[in-house]
Structures are given as C-alpha cells and as structure tokens.
Image (cartoon, rainbow, N blue to C red; front, side):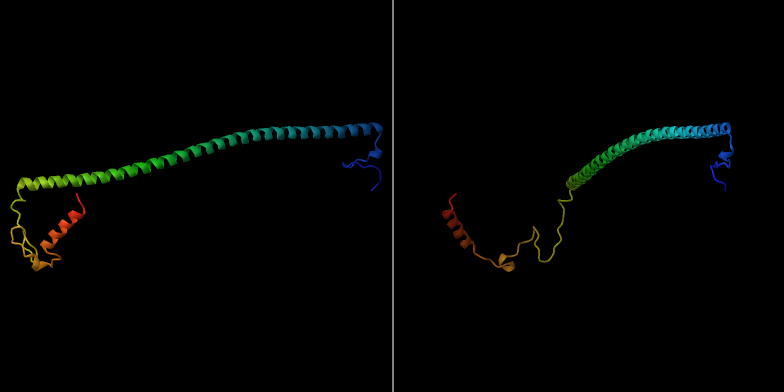
Length: 168
C-alpha cells in the first residue's frame, strides 16, 4: 500500500488538512484519556476489592484462631473428664468389692445366728467315714497309724537340755 502514515482505523494522515489533523489528534487523545480513566477505575476497584478481601481474610484468621483455642479448651476438658470418669470407675469398682465383702460377712453372721437359733449345731451327727475318727469314738493307738520318731522320755530329756542351754 501507499507509504506515509496510515492510521490503524484506515485513515491516511497525509491526505488530511492541518485542522483535521489537530481534530483527529484530539480525538485520539480523548480516547486515550478515556482508556486511562477506565484503567484507573479498574485499578481503584481492584484495590478496594483487595482491601475488602484482606479484611475478610483477617476476620477469618481471627475466627480460625478462636476455633483452634476453643478446640484446645475442649480437648483439655475432655482429657480432664476422662480422668474423672476413670477415677469414678475405679472408686465404683472398689465400692462394689467392699459391698460384696460386707454382704458375705453379713450373710455369714446371719447364717451363724440362724444355726444357733434353730439349734441345728447341737444335734448335728457326724457320719462315720472309714479311716477317720469321730469325737465320741475311741481314738486308734498312735503306733497303729504312724511311726514315732522319739519316745516321750527322749522328748523330756531333750527339753531339759534345751532349758539348761538357753535360760529364760
């Protein structure tokens, strides 16, 4: 195409008169000024949105810190509660053991009172079991059931010897 300064809009600047060139230049400057103003508005809006975003992030960070603090407090309370529950459980188990032993003792006392009150212990008969002796039966001679290691006389002599050696 022909040389010499064509405008991107397709207008040839060489064909214009001086007044038209000034007018054309002013139009371009106006477009540039409008574009700059739009850019400034976009930058101002972006800065404002950035400031609002930063403020929102700051608030959310504070909320997160508070949540972490609350979680720490809950965790501490939970640990303390678990310790109290363990202590209560241990105490409850101990109390149950004590109550069981007390119940056994009371039942034993009641059984003894019942036996004494009814007189069952006085007319109790012991069954004769071979090889055992009963209180009313005559005891078997000691020589028949076991071998003696020393006689009664030997025992008396050793007892006297011990007393002489170890005075009281």
